Image 1 (spheres, rainbow, N blue to C red):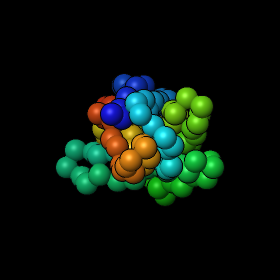
Image 2 (tube, rainbow, N blue to C red; image 1 turned 180 degrees about the horizontal axis):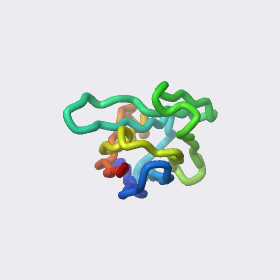
Image 3 (cartoon, rainbow, N blue to C red; image 1 turned 45 degrees about the vertical axis):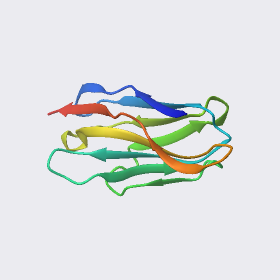
Image 4 (cartoon, rainbow, N blue to C red; image 1 turned 60 degrees about the horizontal axis):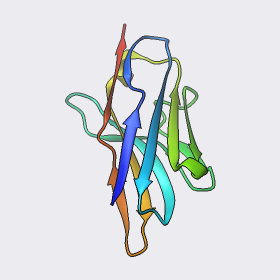
Length: 119
């Protein structure tokens, strides 16, 4: 079985910073892309950032220049450094990873971590 466990969410004032982590564990053969999504109240889930196994990143326009995704392949962990946070960044943040096991390739999700930015 494969699990993704997120950590690092919380309450922060506007302009502050948070760092999210997502660690994958289990019967992992390889991890391809890793991504962060978020869902704000009353809104659809949106892709925030994605990072390939080679380190190529892609960001939503709304977070470019403020958020940075990185990964430690040795630890099967992806990070999201969030700076200059705004109230509109308030959402539940989910980690997603495309993972290959010995017999299967699929998308796995973390449980979500709440990020609340106060004005």
